[in-house]
Length: 496
Image 1 (cartoon, helix red, strand yellow):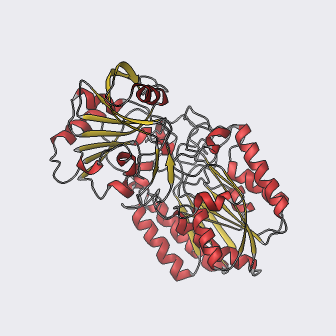
Image 2: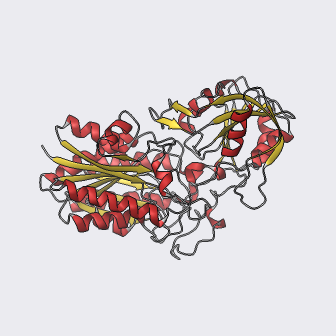
Image 3: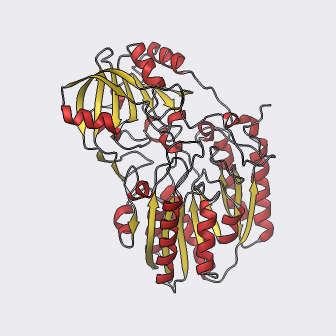
């Protein structure tokens, strides 16, 4: 059996978001585990829906010896600071060098990292690792939103991406990496295919539960089985101002003709699907008014606050939808999560049952025109922010969103606002239960999420509306001030 090193470094970078990813953001836990070194990787990720956890389970079942290096993740945000990247990358390489000789390396990466000084974080990390171990077989798991670069393809033996959005197959993807790494360990050579798409895809329409993404991944599975190759379709992260931004098709296998056939066919299908990546966007006002007219007997109407999705680099504190809920004095409404550490501290200092008079909530980071909601807020429930996720995506993760509170405005007591001290995408019902609220009992749910919420909330939702409220996760890439996007890359899918 082989001696395999494992590690990971995750960050999805929104070039246009205001908050950078500092080293401290990688150290702390949020919805994912904290910075983990050596054996801590096993302790912190065991049983979680993470690629590294899936790989570890599969490798142990195969009898391999694992050498854990370093694993780190930070919530999506603006670019990673030079300090953070250099400290983490240098430690990863140093730990690998100290572990040599090893037979192979598995890396749990994202694929859309941009730093203050690098356009392609993963490509640079892989280059440094390759310099350290030129002949080492390297297989990497990637996020479905990876913006795959030529450097990433060149320096890794294989790159395999998630196939679901919401991402419910992270652990499964890690396990799928093992056979390709074992092929390389046996001395086999993998032929590679990489083809970039020619258009950016807005996040809400990348959902793999609806067409055209659903049909594309069905074709991927069919081609993979027929041609006996490994295929990946990365739909890309459209808020990254880099030359490699956009979707990609990847294929690997021993037969170069089969690899090329499968890759070309999937790339053609991606091109032909362009006009179908579209959907309706609601304004905050019309979405709230519509939701309040619907019966709650079939479950809550879910409003996806996609442009303030912390999972895409949003600040998770914009107030466009909150203002509409208060203005319409909504009943049976709940909003999650609004990240405001100052408000959470004030609530904990005052205690349950207290009223925080004239307190500003949210709206502390922009964008322009977004202001705090100033009101009298009743503190209904307090929490420490620690809970175990129960939904399909975050499943098993020990979340820590810091001191938290459920607040209600005195002028609209039917509106519950779940306030956290750290950002976390509202993609798990345990967020609500941790503060004593059953989301199933609500009439209207506002979730700061683009698609991941569907994994746990679609089952209880009577309807889902995608809302275009102010935020830094711009839903239409045509509105982003790109400077590095290639000229041939269309900023949005062309309509028929």
